[in-house]
Length: 512
Image (cartoon, rainbow, N blue to C red; front, side, top):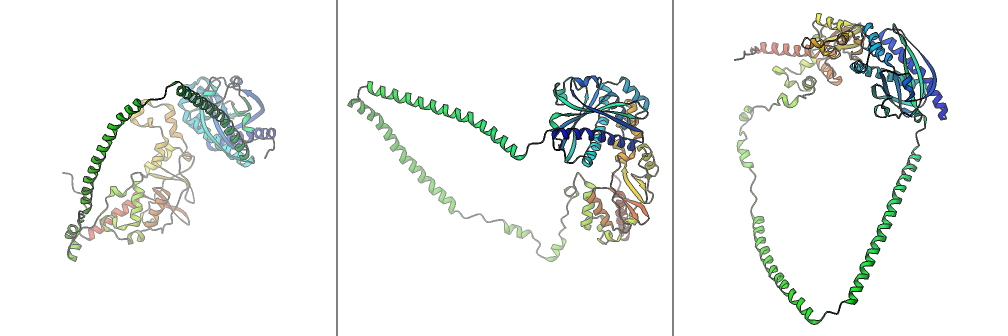
């Protein structure tokens, strides 16, 4: 770990080039494109001076650092970098990326703001991984904001920096094939290299602030006390002067005061007996209330309703809990499965508990699995799923499952403007979502089951991991897939078989 601020600053600059290189490697691996980059020497710049390098629309990623580097620093992409990297993320055609680099404005940049945010997530992830491995004392990096526009116009409002703030900056020139090079920059305020104060220093600062606050309060209190003493002294002096100047009170004055006080005393004497009479009247009423016998509970009436014989008890219907009381609205399917696992009595047709242990995963799984690779587009995977009439596809190979994707995952990745109802607003950017690689939306890790796993184990596993599909694998690899729908089909078939054996009609009556 660097010992001085200068050493930390130098080490950070060296690691900045490596972190940018790691970001380039991640882009190259994810999208299969050639990416190269070169870092330049550090320089001290201000927000004013950034305008010379970032003249047009710029993306600024605000990054919080914890560890040996403490505080916010900034990574900037010029217009070419913004449109090139974000366009690569969403698979935009080369012609559109070139056009945006040449004529794009803030409006076009904000239209792909979500893609810019994803670029920032990958960028911070690459940097964080590199710093954890290479910089001793690093804790974590976190993206706290993204600004798209011209940061030098209102830097304090937009990114929290003044125009005169000095920044230690490292430029990085990146080339993504087949486009021309773009400019990126990491800018570190000087404050991030200053060591964080120790607990003792924080305590001392707090004590100093508290003492500074107490001193004015003490002065104010002393001033208030002096003012009160002066007021009391003035009142005392005034009272003494009045006592000297007033003549002594004569006897008639005293008699007059007494006559005025006598009616008041008579009124008090009259009021006291009246109050005592009221209290005396209230006490018997309270005693009478207390002496009343308590009303007996209605236990005998309840006893009368109880059945008197064992036959009558057997005829009483069992209490059942309605589905609306037991099913969680947020996870209805998994909650029902969990209830089925622990309470076979709620299964339709009163299927016995042996059903959950006798039936195995291999009895209810589908064997026609839809397979895809990580490099397949969502459009291609959706086509495969539709051809096989399934809601799930496994990614990888039978002996190496890399992920699983559902129809809902694909629908969430596609633009809603691809639907026919919104087709009149469809743009090329919306169509480009069809070319997203499935590796970005698949779920992993994938939990698997043995073919001999009981139905109870299958349902408990689904509830535990909050999934609705589980691949079934043996020693040779994946051989099937169990979903909530295959389980429901098995339960429904068992109910129908049991009803046939008992001679019951399982047909649903027609609506009248």
